[in-house]
Length: 166
Image 1 (cartoon, rainbow, N blue to C red):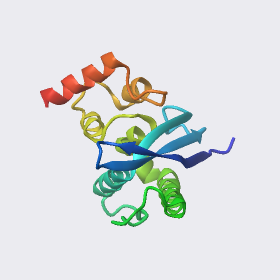
Image 2: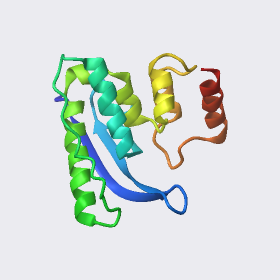
Image 3: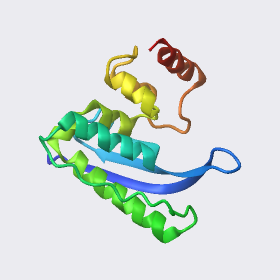
């Protein structure tokens, strides 16, 4: 059987932080039969700044071994209400991920798997990838993977306790 990995970036949503601040996040879905992935189907929500973090981590970890695709450019005048801009950004994010998930070198990076298959925050992903949490990458993906809510309350408290210890 031939290996496949499908990536979708869809369902943009505006998230309000407070009265003045908002950001857009996107649903990232993976469907694969690749043995490299812990889960064969998963969906998580990520914002643009988390993609920037992922690209930086992949660049640090892969060094000069492989070429990393660019993200769509950061636009200081990005409008959360402009469907054309949102569509173009989603297409750029999808193209980035498609290249990344088809690179054997990049597929060995645990930050990539945590990004794609867990709802952990950037800080939590870094701690897990560096072995500074009580969860392995695989356990984190199974415990904090796709679902309708980011974490159950007990698991979230455990992850926050671990962050405080480091």
